[in-house]
Each structure stands twice: as C-alpha cells, then as structure tokens.
Length: 118
Length: 112
Image (cartoon, rainbow over all chains, first blue to last red; front, side, top):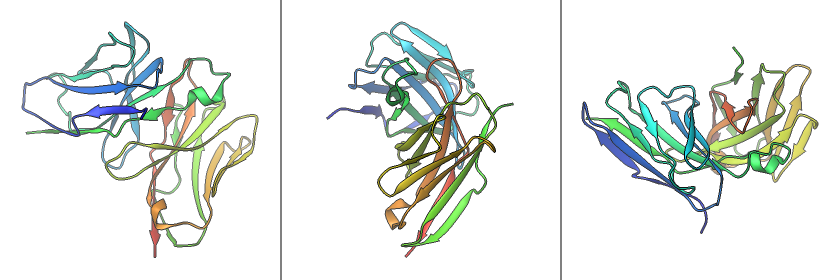
C-alpha cells in the first residue's frame, strides 16, 4: 500500500529540547516537503528537497533543520531555537520537477504530526 | 506580496444543495491551481486541479472554474453530502520547481 507515513501522530516537546518528526514515502517520489499548519490557517512551507542530499529553505525555516540522506526519508528536527513550535506538521511528496506534466505537480500529504509544548 | 486567499472562512449548506467555494489569487504568473480537502486531524487530500490554459474542469461531483480575467478560482460541489464537511484549500504553483502556495482555507459545514 503506497503512501506517505508520518510518525508519531502526537509529540510533546519540553523546553530546550530538540525533537525529530519522521516522514517516509514509498511512492518513489523525488521531491519532499515539510509544511507547518497553525489552527484555522493555511500551510506554510518550512523546507523542501528536490533530490537526495540536497534541500532548500522555505518561508519559515528558522528553528528547523532537515536531512535527505535517502530518497524515501525526509526527517524534520524542531530545534530549541523554534520558540513557538506548537502546530500541526505535514509532510508531502511529489513525483517529478517537470512542470509540463501536470500530474506530477500534485503533492501527496501524510496524515500529519501534532506537536505540542509541555 | 503575491498571495492566494479565500473570500469566505466558513460556508454552511444544506445536505443535497450545491456548494461553491471561492478563491482569489493575485499572481498572474500562476499557471496551475489545485484544490485540497482536509478533514480534522488529517492531511490534505487532492480533489481536482486545473491548468491556466483551461477555464473549467470536471470531476466526480466537483467542478473547478478558473477566471483568469479577475484572477478567481472556484470549487463547485454538487449534491453536497455530510462527508463533504471539511476545510478546503486552494493552492497555486508559481515558483520554479514544484512548490505550491496555499490559501487560508474555507470550512464547509453540511447541515443534515
């Protein structure tokens, strides 16, 4: 059963602690993304990766870090520098970068991780 | 700055009626638009997409209309059902590569 798996579903962070959110996909997608969603709001891009061993900052990258050592995995670390980490975090992936193929522009999302501060 | 936005934060409709969710975009360079449905506590699910060389596209019970003249996008849901209750997001693809800019979302509530 192909898809994107995020874990854990719920995560609690203590002050000063770094936490890592997992995202795994078996869709053989090249590109992966992390979005943050605050209550009643839209999605804001944190980081994205178009190819293994490469990633780019999105609109709100401060206080976050990522790695892309494998095509199927794109973990997000919420560092202690992120002072307001409570949010719903969504991972997504898409197939190819060729924008002439409209079907490859669709993002497929995981089920999300709710991060809260203790 | 360029942005995607929605006119109505909450839309309440009677079961069986048609729903129309609207979205305004401001970037004339946008050439691809997509609608997602998000149920509470879940990730967004793809509904339908449209490229800028089209003005209408139909799916199963859903239709997306694109008016480039006024930079307006709408999602029409026919015979709305309780299972359609969710937050609906429009998004546009304007940047190099494959990144979507999302609007703020509209909550659709279906009354039985």
